[in-house]
View (tube, rainbow, N blue to C red):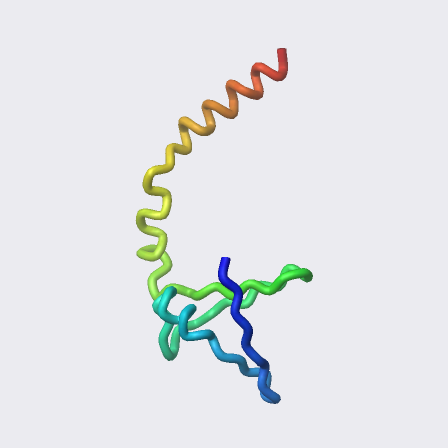
Length: 79
């Protein structure tokens, strides 16, 4: 994880570092969600089309196989 610093202006504004804008293809007008869990603030870009943004996200994963492994492991502990 890379860390970068910015400063908050008198008006409460800050700048998204250029490296982050490039990496996440952010440009003027893009929207961000600020999530505050009380300890940490996370900033997440909102995609124009959330459905398209999720396309292929689980590629290479095998959730049924993982679930079956988990269930076999749990059964073994019950005996």
